[in-house]
Image (cartoon, rainbow, N blue to C red):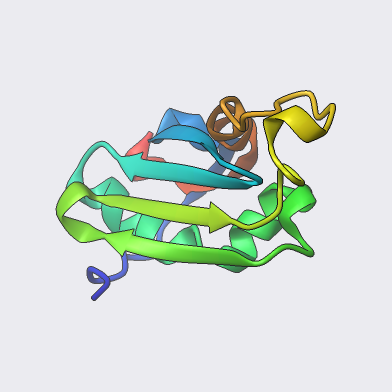
Length: 119
């Protein structure tokens, strides 16, 4: 279950990384992307904001790929499993990030509207 949504309020366009951590890596041709909030207010916002649709918007390279979101409330985290992002795996292609190690930081660099109370 998701936490209660955060109250509405003023927002500012900033990199996601100001309010969330991330870690990523490969599983063959697939990528795992974990994103977590540092505190409960941040978790309430993250859980309701970072949907599969929003991930596809922030990371257009995932737009046509199967993406599964797992909610991990006890960790205040989300995990996204992106199928096929790495083709057949690290040894089969020349992607700039063949093991998806930088995918989390790429997501954290993307800008979106964040409640000012979280900044």
